[in-house]
Image 1: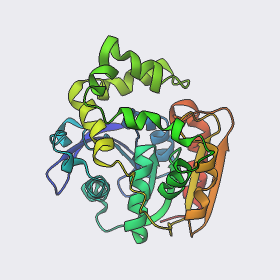
Image 2: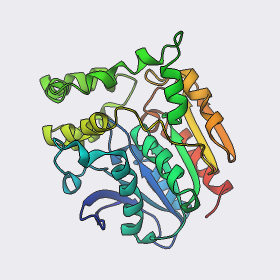
Image 3: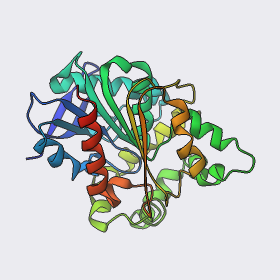
Image 4: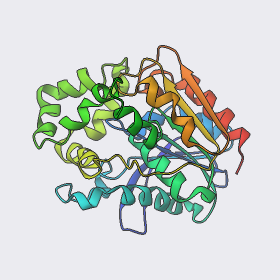
Length: 286
């Protein structure tokens, strides 16, 4: 059974989170990306719970109404704060100081790379969906003959002050057609817009981009067993960045390519992705 609770952290923020599974099971923290929400993990949570894991999927900083410092002050959304949130959410969930599994997609993947870099001994395993290692991503962006710069052109648009209004105009038409135009089911889209489809939440989500223009490319080689899942129809992450991610993992590493799947893997191929996650967790117990 999946419950929705509030997790209050040491920093005084309260994160809305979906949780499932026994409280004494090994923790799996699942971090969503943009422009999604905790609902990305709707199919993964009960599957993880049935295998004895304690699964926790929060709406992250700015997405949770109780964890939404002023996005006009970009210092509230610096990368170190996003990484710290993950560790504090783990503590608030009852696993302070304990090892856990970490799963992240898109921006949640970026945060997960940061957690793995800073706190490798806390992690039993790392699983990343779509978002390549920041250094691989950066290298692909700088390739003269590559297409990653074109794929990432929306990042520049997100820096503009009017972007939030444009994305929400006409019943969030640009969000629906542009960012969700990769085969995301309508029901999933409505769930995510239930979290992000208001000016306050969307401005806070855009502050992640505005406060972290360098995409935290200084993250080093990861020393945690890592699974990287990428869909070969991803419109925003190209093959160069994806296939080179293994160059920046110094521990056991596996890459799984999902044919015909786009960027929003958990909304498009949840059963296959969950199957891969469960096998990865089993290979690397806490």
